[in-house]
Image: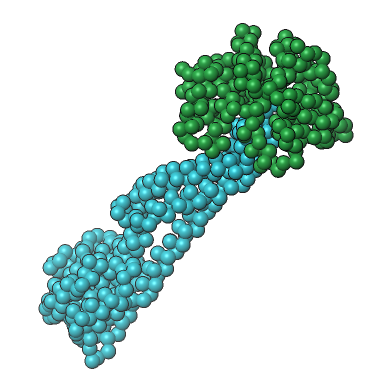
Length: 227
Length: 341
């Protein structure tokens, strides 16, 4: 079953008098539970691909279908609801809310879903336990290491049990050892929970963890490997 | 505060004049009344016992007469020095006030220059020789042409024991009808006519109203400036929190979530700042009233409705001022804020 279906997607930016294609006629199908790595140099369109797939960036042309729903035919509010319910993001810079504790950061998506206080607490604790941070729940992001912050960010993405996880350079700010731990965690979540994982990375070694590797170049996508 | 300002202004002169009810015509001229009929000193005690006696700041009885001296006609006024100076704080005396019961006189500036009298000079009135205890600086009123003598001395000289010509009454009357106090005086002492001095009242009320209106305009300007400051601060805050808002949008927050979060923060800010503003305002009123008006404002002088009103106003100001920034927040492009560097 197809989870993501990008059909001739183009995203064009006007830069003064010239036009730049961040995505150029991209067609890509990703099955439910697949782990796809997207590689390529900076500015090649990896992040744009993830944002378009996550419903944050409206393409200039083409269609984006996630779990059978054509994303950009929805209203912004319907798209936010879909993102709230089934899409998790993990960013290179973690993007945790600085004045909230690890626990509160993880509970935030559940608050947006309108779950009860008790359910928020129960699920946030479970998510933090699953990434090994049960003892760091009451710490603010500034009191956590980079690896710990990224694990909080992963717990925040997973707490709502999303169908789709979009990870944009999740190990970009981490050292080799911590980066490997984070990659192990993402791969484990993909395998154990069946979460569809779309990983953008410029590191070919980390990209090898994916079942398929898609290379981006000047906005164009091309499958270059399959495990 | 208005009551206190009113009370302070009340000190600047009498606002009820009490004269004998008479068949003959009394001629008022400023605060000067001539006539043959007089009021008994016992009647003054009855004035002090009227139902609104708490509103009476001061009662100053006077006995008027005229004498001729060196081709000048001089007004002689018997008075109680301590009470008169309370009603006329603008008096400047070179020398001293006369002492009750003594043969002393306080003379006006014109009398002083016309009769070449100064402090410690002797002034002959009838068979009595009075020592000039002080000279009034020029006031531009009838006081410049008058000789003030302690009431008992004046009564002895004029052979009018226990009699007065007129009673000046200063009443604190903000919000209470001055006519009612006048009527109570006439009920207590049937043989007098108590007349509110409209000019004084209107001046007094006008001053109080002007002061209140000025405060209101000032408060409105402060409120407006406050709203603009809150709007500016909220706009800056939202600009600084662009990444946070972008993150919330990526987590699935829609415009309603963002409004709820941002307006909720403004609501808390409004409630909190309203309470702080109320406490600060009360303290400043207390301090300014003491330093500016020399009056004491108690916490109990603050009307109860001011507490919810100020917190409500502060909260509404915060909500109104943050409405536009909150409306702008969902329009932030999350991609721009979240793009990895």
